[in-house]
Image 1 (cartoon, one colour):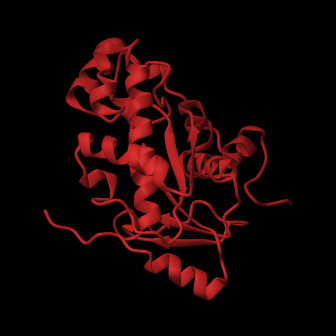
Image 2: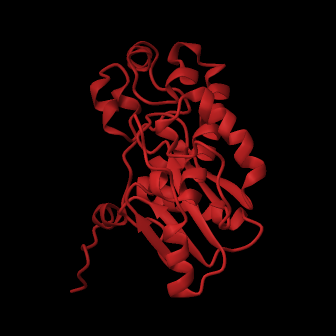
Length: 233
């Protein structure tokens, strides 16, 4: 299916309107998986012409993604990845875990960006970062597309490594997402240490439901302690 190649339009706009000199594209992978980390890549590309075929990682075959990631590693000005573990996702919730992974990626860059182009419509990053959200930014923005490919290839490799000790789950094939093989393995063997056990899929596993973790929000903690939600009488 044909697609429009990504451009530097948003980055040029940020540079012109904010004076930003270093702009990072940020994208995540693994948000909807049942197992493994959520991973975020921050990529700085400058305004150079991108490698041929660069686009959202989801539009590329695994072979093409891997080959493109090898090229991008040398082509980008800089990039870094940040991850939040399943334990952190269970404890913090996905939005906070995404922010943690993104901050880890951005702070691992050799130079702090002046602005960030974030894929999607929701700014899960927030202050003090200067953020521009772009729906389908992984298709339209060169830096975000580069981050998309690098994040996807790295996380897929991580999941394949985790799957060596859990072959029944086929993490190399499904990257922790709920494929039929993954679902069947969960029903038979229960969650691995790499699963997000606070998620609702645990409710559909009668044999393993007792392993589900309940995330304790500040509000729930206040109620448990006998306090009031936002009131002080």
